[in-house]
Length: 287
Ligand code: GUN
Image (tube, rainbow, N blue to C red; front, side, top):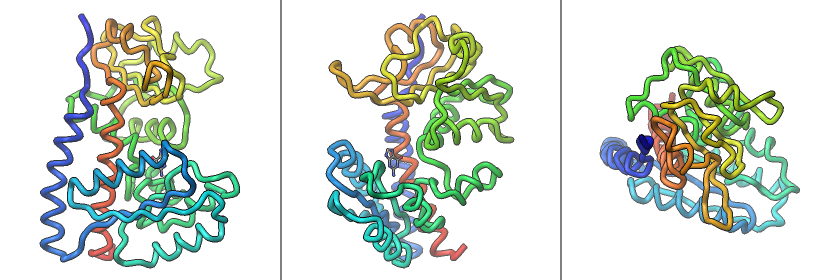
């Protein structure tokens, strides 16, 4: 029997409509519009699309957004100066520097310069540390999107074996930590490019999460029948956008599966809005 499709697009729409109510309520009570400042350096077309979509999402739920577009030859000092200004600006609650930045700029320095209180990507080492200690201020957007997709589809993680493929700072590492925490209570295996006999590990997964950026990498023989498969990959190929999972073949084996597009991506976007509203709440309550 083909797998159930985990429809991220409609779930994201539902969460956005919940958020819209919360934003209206916040504005009424605080006379402040929660505002995201997006910083885009250079003219990478994919980054331009991502930032445009993020701003459109903000508009849809009543969150304000600013675009700070800097030329490709911007120096590190110039970018740090802008971040310093946004850190101090009380009208800005969340700051996002779209990655990647041009090569003359040190990404780590930039991410560390963003005030942890306004770090709605949750990339600052302070926010990463707090996440590991299970007292997060902000949850990173893509891992949080994956967790919400599981929760809101009533897919139990407690006592389950989750196998995460890919150890990136943005997805694999934080998601492994989050699912192993008290509350989620999964047993987590984190796999990467040096994992020996990967298929023998992925076949153990009750929940398989794949975030490696290799089109159609996970094949049907790598999946336990009935498993939940979360595909975080977005790969541009001659056949259009495809995930890291061979969707057609794996959906014949899996119990639940996310499509690409329309799976994790829409939830990642919505979690940025959640963090921006939380940032505004924290700022007005001076927490
Ligand atoms: N580039 C690709 N993904 C992301 C993300 O989640 N946040 C930022 N700031 N840049 C990205």
